[in-house]
Each structure stands twice: as structure tokens, then as C-alpha cells.
Length: 170
Image 1 (cartoon, rainbow, N blue to C red):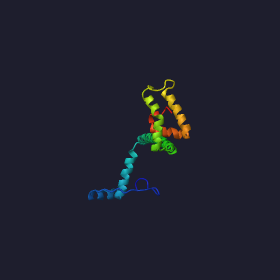
Image 2: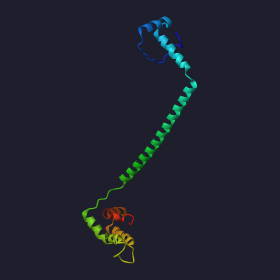
Image 3: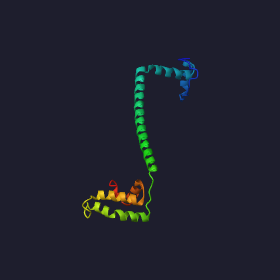
């Protein structure tokens, strides 16, 4: 047998090729079997390989894989941060209660705040001079909360459902 014997438990593969019958006879006469001939050729060619160039190729491949891995880790961090933001926003949405405004409440809120909202939209024209429209709306809102006996958050949500333009004023 030419070259080293197979290591115990080493995985093997079959290499198959077609050659002329006359070559097979020559190979068997000179090397004993075609398998031994192929093994010897493969071992010779493998021994010619430069171990330094193989090491360099492996090092380059390793560096490339590390770069890909770091890129994937950055993407993972980005995705996890986005997921965290989405989960936080979902919790916020779940914690906020949707306030429905009945037709009666809508009419009442419109009646209470209509004049003040018009004054804001007209830059204060047509409104009492001693208060800015924003100050008047805040006073109106406080009176509305007290008179209707609502908590401030519920009252604010109801008023904003009817007049979204008051966001930031109350």
C-alpha cells in the first residue's frame, strides 16, 4: 500500500471514473490496483500543496466569517431594540383605555368648548381681552371637570375626542 493507511473510523468517500481498459491493465500491472494508484496520485498532489498558502486561505476565510458574524450580531441587536420598542408601545396601547364619547356627551362638550375653540382658531379675535383663549380653555376645562365630576384624564380624553386641536392646550 502506498501512502498512509486509513485511520480507524475515518470517513471515506468513493471516487469513480471511467478509464480505457488498456490503462486499467497497465495500472494493475504496475501498482497492484486502481484504488492504490488513485490514492498514490492524490497523496502526491496533496503533498505538493503549500501549507502556508492553505493557512492563509483559512485565516482569510475565518476573518470573513467573523465579519459576517459581527454584521449579523449588529442586525440582531437592531432587531431586538426595535422589538423592545414595539413591545413597549404595545404595552402603552394596552394600558391606555379607549374612551367612547356618546352623542349626548359630544353635544355637551361641543356646547362647552365651541366658543373657546373658535377663538383659538381666530387667533383670539372675538374673545374676552382679559384672558388668552388658551387660559380660557384651561379654566373652562377645570370647570367642566368639576361640574361633571370626572377625573382629569377621562375628561381630557373625552374633550380631545371631540376637539383634537386642543391637544397641548389642556
